[in-house]
Image 1: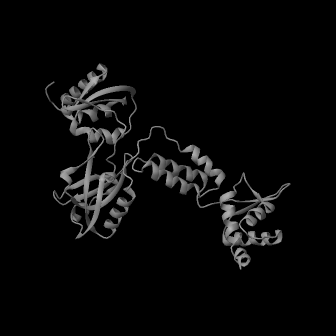
Image 2: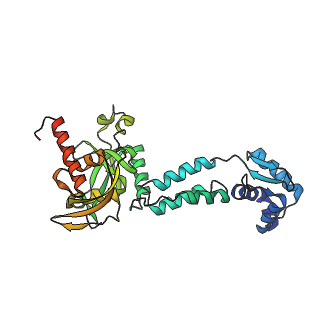
Image 3: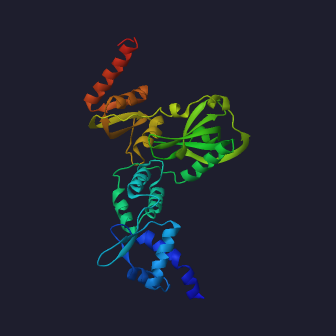
Length: 330
């Protein structure tokens, strides 16, 4: 019985062997195939292997024969070619909304779509120094729950949190649950967002998916459909954060305590803060540019530039430019 079972499994084992162990630079001879099959408890003869390879080709596998001193075979065309896998691996590794552990799990699965030899080149490629990753391991479950709610036309409830300057989770509204109707899941600025209509305000709100917890689907149908009826998702989602070059500086800022979550979100959980004057100070390596100065101005008097003096003066001048452009007094 074991031998009969092994013979029946031979085609599947051979297909797996070609998929995992061969590529253009690593063809496999019939003798090597026999050795691998024998290790799996499957006896094989050279003549039967020829017919097995023909059967696999008829089934749709692109088995390429390489002639030479030692004729070999390898699996040619695959569902995903190496350049495509590189793109997918890079996207997974650079995604902030995925935790480091989840990124590693997905990359290992992507590596199984090519030979073990080429999979090693993917491993070497994926290092991204200093990449800030989300700390929310349950984001996959949240995305799935939100997608299901959208498909089933159901409102959801959840808790929403922020980070304080000590890097601790703080539930908004004292832990009171939000109720919202989900409509779009949007990946922007390396984060996943839910675009929804909140029940309390009946207005469109954006929620960072990795900051949502305890999500539950309600029995209520989604409300706010009239708001999204004529909305163009593509046009709406173009409201993104732009990238802009500039000179690198180490900038020390004083910030009010309420901005701790904003800074931990942007610069990661390893951000170093120091308590100062009812808020905190932090020193950041940044590219000083118009978007950076505009970002600071958006916080009004909740942020001050401590040093360098050149950046503080640039911020002051930029504020004056805005005032002059809008007819304000300088």
